[in-house]
Image (cartoon, rainbow, N blue to C red; front, side):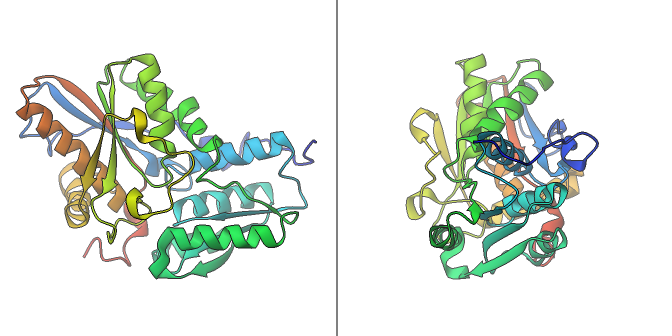
Length: 312
């Protein structure tokens, strides 16, 4: 089976996905030993404004190459916002219609950005969170499977593959292999599954930690408390070195501190990522570790959270 879609990214905005900056945190680490470094990868620099541009373009590429995505189909998926923005952006460039199932309580900025790209949105119950959107997308796809191409970011191996092929190698190259620890927040878990696997293949001594909301009723939009959620098929925690429970309010405050102290304008999940990285750094220091190079991913920029009160 061959797709009739020609995917030429050259000279389009999609060509700029990836190769995001990696910056060293300098002011918020003043209580750490000089040999303990924290670096952050600014995924808000992607054209869609988040790390989700990476798996979105990989899933669409692979869908076209496999022949499952053709010009007569609609791209359908569930999202808490950022993957939806990425898919809507890609659909606008490739002229493929996009339908998204999304909790109605996501930020107004995410809703507006998705609509600006021309995607159709089906809102689901805010009480059911991302799980409600997942179930709604499954039901819609089951009703008309020939009408839709469903990338399904929660079970599609192309999601972690994007990070294995690109995010991991970028970090390795940017730090010239000096990384000792990798921390990533988990939603679909594609970032940590793909990036982490690449890094430990390069150096088996690198430790990989997931930053997970510390409570089922958390306020970290886009992240999953796995014990109380539908667990993504791509998530396999068996090889991780640990889980760092991450609280909501301190994560919000960390996002504000990043802007005030480092000049980095990033979202609440980015605050959670840096909070977890600092938590790990302090623990290592307390254990007597004098040198470490910790890298974390800042999933998106802060411009989607004005209406959520993050910057009040």
